Length: 152
Image (cartoon, rainbow, N blue to C red):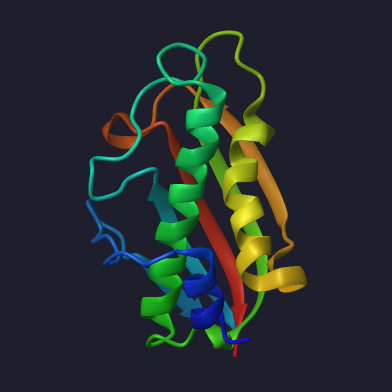
């Protein structure tokens, strides 16, 4: 099954990739590695902002991490001229959660993105990962995830 067909089966429509909001580019390809800049828990409705463990629940944050994954897929799709079947492997995700004092379930939040990569790419979606709690993320969003992807 093609990745496009898999996305349809999962009910996922990729958004327009987000433009850079500072002095960086959304993605860089070097050799067979594609580095995707951090994608926020943002969507057309405004996304998920706030601090996990205070005004954002862990379940909401997990869904926010999934939004980050959808935004990563949109950037990967743009970098590969609309052909996600060129993805060989999701190599690594870097996940950041705007966490309140005492909130330690950071890995469970980032699973929202990790689970999506496996749903979309199967075993090729299994990856190395970091999951970090931070004081603040850009524009007040609750979650941000970046990626390194092997492509052909």
